[in-house]
Length: 212
Image 1 (cartoon, helix red, strand yellow):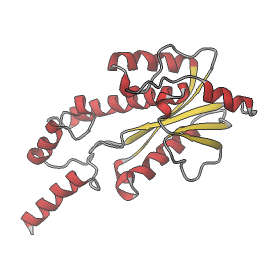
Image 2 (image 1 turned 45 degrees about the vertical axis):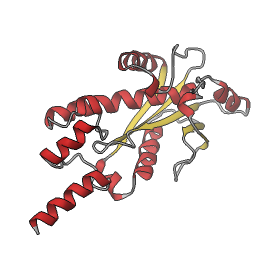
Image 3 (image 1 turned 90 degrees about the vertical axis):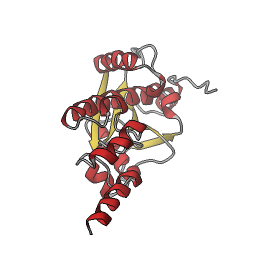
């Protein structure tokens, strides 16, 4: 059982080293077969941290939405995406890092230190930074970023579901659920599907084989 709960100890440690503006950075959407990957960067006021911040996956949709509103009301926020085309052109890790870099670039004034979820830092960072494994369960800033990234991406997938009904994106957010994968077989591949991901690639390959 995971007993980790985010606190501000990593932020406080960075402040003790002389940093003043610490941003938590996280992304969502590495695993889906469809849709962009979305990242958020958040600079919290440690005197006004919303109660109940946690890894977005551990929260209900209603709680995430409520916390997202609170975060936007008391923190500095940057949110950005990397497109399906970028995911296919590079790879999902590099695309995730591109989204992170874009989210950080939206923060004005700029942060002077980053806490980045995961075990790798994005290439091209111009800030001092620390990679934090399971960061969304350890740092309140990263948890806030995970909540914002997920709520924004989930809302985007609901909108895309209206344009492409039948895949269940309004409930599965593009992840490879049984509903989604069966719809791929029945309805085919949309422009929002990641062609470099095996289940999508395999369907396209089957279609090409049939038509050749």
